[in-house]
Amino acid sequence: MNKQLGIRFSKINNKEILEQRLELLKLSGIKDFFVDRTETPDKGEILKKFALEYKDCKRCGLYETRNHFVYGEGNPDAVIMFIGEGPGEQEDKQGHPFVGAAGKLFNKMLNAISLKRNEIYITNVVKCRPPNNRNPLSEEISSCIPYLYEQISIIKPKIICALGKVAGNSLLNNDNTLGSMRDRFYHFQDAKLMVTYHPSALLYHLEWKRPAWEDLKMLMIEYRKL
Ligand code: URA
Image (cartoon, rainbow, N blue to C red; front, side, top):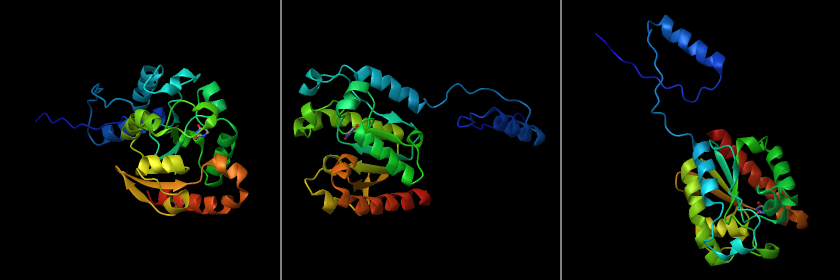
């Protein structure tokens, strides 16, 4: 009987591990291998394609003053996704999220829970800088948020961490205070969502660093459960 057994190795990008697996299969009697070209599309490629496609977006007035449409970046297979408010001056100049002063503090926060930038995905509610770093207007948020929903549906994170009140309000569709949104998980699509302080706020309010640390510990405990 000519039986076909399909085993996907799409997640293996280490040559030695792949060779070991193939050797084991040969030992168990399987001799014919073929490359299946009907692979599911690579999430990184999809995100790259969309970032290019949207870079000249004019859905709201922010395009008039922006230098860059800052789509987001990080690991497309990330289990944790962080969502900020919108690009600041440095982010707008460089085209990358969280690279200015708030980004430096954000990196330290990640470091404190043993995570690296290349393990997570990070983006913002609005992709273009509001002039003088003002809060994004509700019409700017509603024009831009479909990009964020699309990113979430591609990446499929298990945990989403909203950084600050604007991100929390936008994702939870409420107008609550930051204090009342933090310290718990919400269901968001297939992910657990939590809200914590924005790193920019922590630069000015040192007294919020302790509760922010409690939030990060809660995030880490949830991450370790996965
Ligand atoms: N603040 C944000 O909310 N996002 C950035 O990318 C930078 C600062």
